[in-house]
Length: 464
Image 1: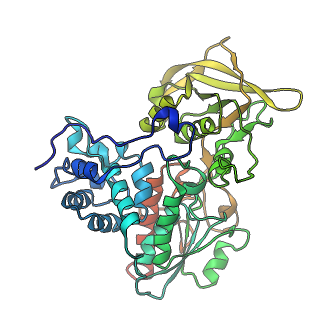
Image 2: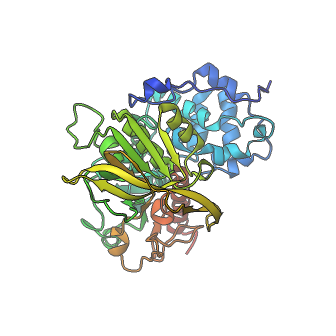
Image 3: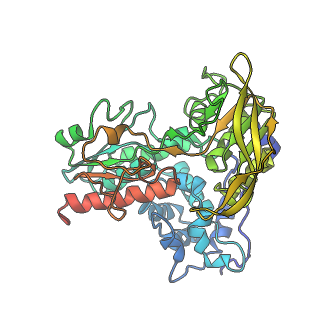
């Protein structure tokens, strides 16, 4: 019988006043009993809109039906027909605006906890799987993937399952892209990411690190050396700044650098000698998930006061509601309808304050959000010793600048056919943040999967 409880089965979490002092995962995940209870809330719709609202089209009712039966390995097999990173998606995918937003249970209550169930299934598999997946029979075709973030890993995994010989070239010393350097340990444990990557390696994916493509080898050289197609999934790692006075002072970080030092370079661990300022009073400028990650990480490094400075109201914030909620629980102070105008430094060049101005909302802009405008004479100063700029990133220009025939738009994003993900250069495909600018993990994965399908169609002779 279906579980007709209108509310989701709650997921256990660390107490806010405990977790804001450690980097352990906030949510500890469903027990088997909780997973069975939540899975029973699924009505197994004949026309499941949750599937069509998932960027990688996971067969959601099918995998949940297997959970109801207690066959978690079969549930995992269903998920991995569509997704190469289920444990990642179960943790960081914004299900509330995608699959869960279309769940019919959400009409008169809360939607089914699809993400929580996906995480449970993936974690169960990692804990209980007896052996790694076997490498498929090879089809004789070679494909290169540049970048080992969510789009690159998804493209690589999808092609490997079809028998392609896939080589992934990663600039950093560790594979995973933004999953490793951008998302904090307390939201996405790095051990989980590496276990998912190990599954792809078992399928035959060859990952080569410390390979800054465009420097050590160009896209053209890859195509000339035997690779029949190239997928570019280099992300958006070039931070944006506000071009305000004082951004060059000691104690001003881009969120990208701040989080990379913490996540990839393990600055939060005493045994790592990673250079980083451990500020006492921090202002984080921005209102997205990255801003929440930076603010919550600063707390865990020992900051006494952390401020989110955002020029619009909470209603316009792009961050997930869950991340905003967690940040508030942990003690982050939200300075909404405020905008920085100047970073203040002392004689030694260190940050001692952030001058801000109060804002008010006017008419909607091109994004549909009300345009903020400054209130004259409302300037005030926050006493801080660090400022973290989290207002978005742009794609790194290295690949496009070293690849003749590869077109980009005015924002530096690679131009593609959105259905096939093919670029303006024959045999070269692209996806993820390199194409869209900074977006979500699951959207990047969807692009990687579409690109893999297109590459397969082309190389197997189905299309010209």
